[in-house]
Length: 300
Image 1 (cartoon, rainbow, N blue to C red):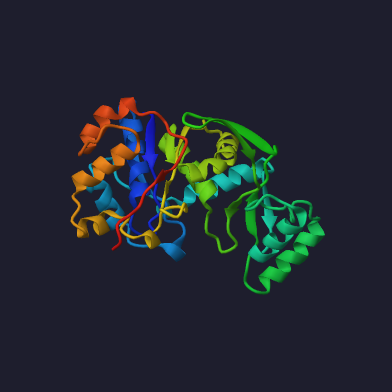
Image 2: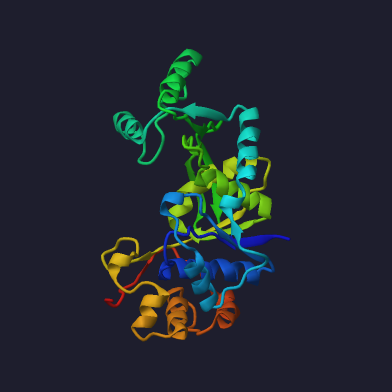
């Protein structure tokens, strides 16, 4: 059964931007006859928080999902198998760089911000053995990175259109053993039969490498739809510093869930509706947007 999904990271309460994207993802799946899954991307244990508040908020605005909630930290064997599959194709290499090393090398090489400068790609076996020994003396291991065979890849987004971006040698597994986001999200989408991914457009630049990685693992890339973010009054991504931005904060100020749903539907250019079922009814009139919604929260 084809499916869509919503996959938050349990790092705190969902704000209006998260809930807005969740509504679009849910309605996109339901209106096209797809199943809809909820997946908790909890691999970043340093930032992990109890996910129950996120689940409660999604239920509060009327979003439902099929089956049990999927939890990434319970699927580690899948990610290990995927790395072995990629390694068999020569598409994995060891990286000995610290974050500081990468920042400094990227700056010197004029590498695009956030991209890996390729420091360890051309190392000899002797150089790698020396680096491994140095790390081992500190009880550390090298990270594993993806070795793509292309520099760029083009995806077609149902909201944005054609987008070409760099296929970066992203981290697959950190030196501490933790599996990385770009690997896990691809493995999970393939394993769960997800063929439609609706998410915030801050992740658009990840689509080329994730699409290419999907194909390298023998999967079929999903249809993407990247929704513009919600910005705070200062023009930055909406955050807690902006004031009342979560359901609980807004309810504390006297707003009902129905009022919040009307606000979210209006922000998408749809009629103001006060329930998820009504949102689904009007969703066929949704015209994908290309500009963010600027929200001015009330102070808490």
